[in-house]
Amino acid sequence: MASELFDSGLKIRREVLGAEHVDRSLAAADDFSRPLQELVTEYCWGKIWSRPGLPRRTRSMLNLVMLTALNRPHELRLHIRGALNNGVAKDEIKEVFLQAAIYCGVPAAVESFRIAREVFVEEEKARGERS
Image (cartoon, rainbow, N blue to C red; front, side, top):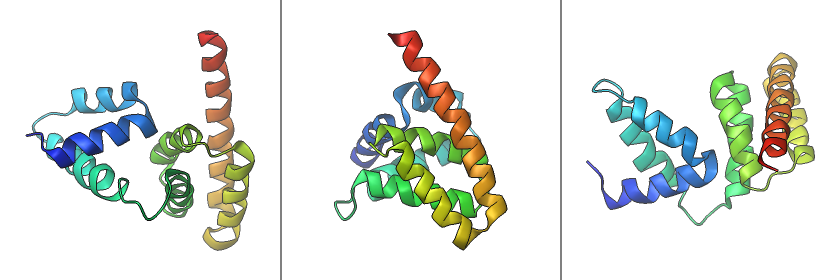
């Protein structure tokens, strides 16, 4: 059931991750996974990402480090795109992963660099197709 918090979270989630991805995730939800989609949309996006204390760019960079530390490549790929959407530059993403190498471990950062390079290529290709 939609609420004001859900609607606010849905708007932010679409802006950061892209409407296509978010709509696909919500459409794929079934009776088992729908409660998680609602929870994530309401609280992660509607309650936390909407807070004024940090700009979206900073939240994105924090997510990149945390997802590197947690070894969550699927979510990392998604949040690299989100970081780009939030104005984080490739060079800043590089610096985030270098910082993560020291505090989270070199193997984790190596994987994050690999995933980022793939995302950058995919994004450049998609931009070329839209031109």
